[in-house]
Structures are given as C-alpha cells and as structure tokens.
Length: 225
Image 1 (tube, rainbow, N blue to C red):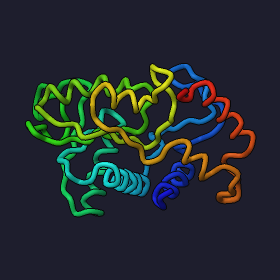
Image 2: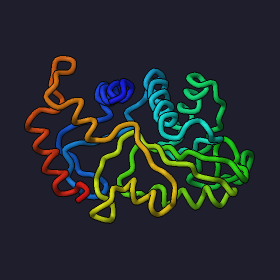
Image 3: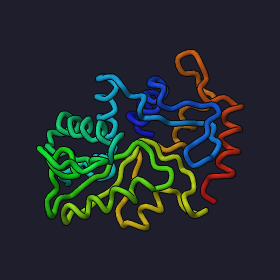
Image 4: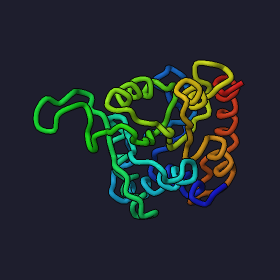
C-alpha cells in the first residue's frame, strides 16, 4: 500500500472522521463504522486533505483535466482544497466549481459557484463518500446542462465497498456502469482494515478482534457477493 494511503488512514482516525462503533446510516443500515468528512474543520486538516485527494487524483487520472467539481455542500471545501494542493504539489492550475442548492438570480447569478463551465472542459467530480450514488444522480444532469463537458472520473476519499442497488456491484462500480466514467477512492475499507487491524496506533488498537468480527458480519450482509 502506498505511503500516502497509510498516512491518510491514520489522518482519518486522528481527525475523528472515521469512527468504529454502532451507527445507523441514512440508508437505514446498521454499521460498525461511520465516516463524516464534516469533521475536517481546521486549516491544517483541509490542507492535508487536499494533498491526499491531489495525490489520489494524480495516481488515478493524471493531470490532464481542467476543473474539479464538488457537489454542494460538502464538496465545496473539498474541491477548493484540492485545486490548491494540485497547484502546490504539481504546478498545475485547475479551476474549481460547485453547484448551489438554489439558483442565484442577482450578482453572481446561476446555479454554479466558482468557475463557469465551458464546452470541452474535462471535469473530475470530488466527493467524501458514495453509498448509493444518489448525489451523482442529482449533480450529473446539472453538470451536463451547463456545458458540453467531459467527466473524466469521480474521486471519493473512502470506498465503503458495499453493494449498491445490485448484489454484485459496489455503488462506485454502478456509477461507472451507468454514467460511463471511471471511479476511484483515496483508500478502500479493505485497505483500512489491513492497515489498522490488531496494530497499535498511538497507544490503542483501533480495529481489534471484536470490531473486526463485526466488520466481517456487516460485509457478509452488505458486501458485494
């Protein structure tokens, strides 16, 4: 596993973004883990987060694109932080863009925040996590309605590796199948488990035998068949 992936897993734990316990997800599923990107709240955290996204985008998609699009609301700081990191790490200037939840009819009008989209723009969509693909269902038509853009791919921070609407495909795989663009993540849950299981980190074992057993049971039910 790449060094930045290992660091990102520890960064999620340190930032209390990734937690293990008893959680009820929006989908109604009872989950032994929960990821909340809203817990990244400081300048240092956002700078580091942007760097991890930038490295993952570079690894998966290269730098041959023009815009990073972050769906409102959580995607807004993600796309801003990542465009800054790409500039700093790779010397590449890309634009950021997001949608508004409501269309603005005065001043900076329209449904977009940040850069306007132009025909031919190559776009990377950035999100925190995708469980069902609902966000893409909402934002992809908005993107395509603004200009004739090419979506090169979707990047999320954590691939939960759960089945989507079909038993044999993850939500990320379903998005790729439906929309025809690639999907990727900084890390996947199997990589998280590999890095943290029965290993002491800062004086504690984050994933012990009990949590591992609950994760195994969860993926037996909700994992891809």
